[in-house]
Figure 1 (cartoon, helix red, strand yellow):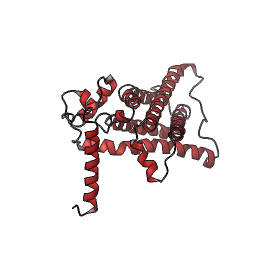
Figure 2 (cartoon, rainbow, N blue to C red):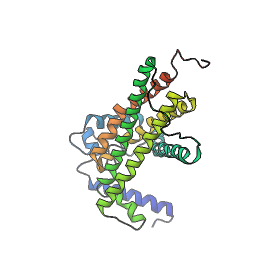
Figure 3 (cartoon, rainbow, N blue to C red):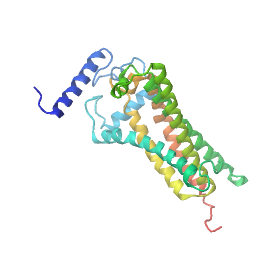
Figure 4 (cartoon, rainbow, N blue to C red):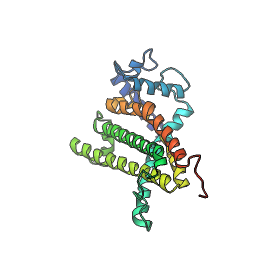
Length: 275
């Protein structure tokens, strides 16, 4: 008989995990010789394999053991959701300031182009950076939409907790609306940062862009380490695991590179602060 509340909770979690592994015993294998058994699929995509290998490298290059997690992986897994939420809240805060606090509009005050012919390369850099950030947010929102709408029932506990279980079509529509709003707010955030940095040479927005880039790296790694094992993203949605893998290996590096390039383009070597 388990006495304390903490021990009962621990026992419940262990039994739940064991039950789920048993249910997928034919698909998943802990510390397997092949990555297919670890991911529970016969033909994983290259980006999914690279995401699992990234988690394995961060985890100390140990075997594919889902029961082992070092401090690096644990820290990334813990802070990644906070960074994703922080990005959205920052965008919502800027929109709130622009509409209700500032005497002049902060959002969409400037565009992403300068008329100076000598700044055409900079225009290209800024706009490519904006496109990459927009694609990244679109991939993230789409991936989490598929996780919530195409999952196999693991997410229904949220509705049970509040005593309400809507129809599947209604919950899918709600998820689509929520993640569309999230993507739009974050795209507006990056547009505001880049436009103020490009036109007004605002160093605070440049610093904010660099901070957002650091949070993007950590949050993307957090999504990548959630691929594989019975508790992986691919168990809820294969489309989501592919999109998150693409973010890790394609979008995120290019977005960070062009974000740094956008900062240098805003303050080129020929730029004179006193001019």
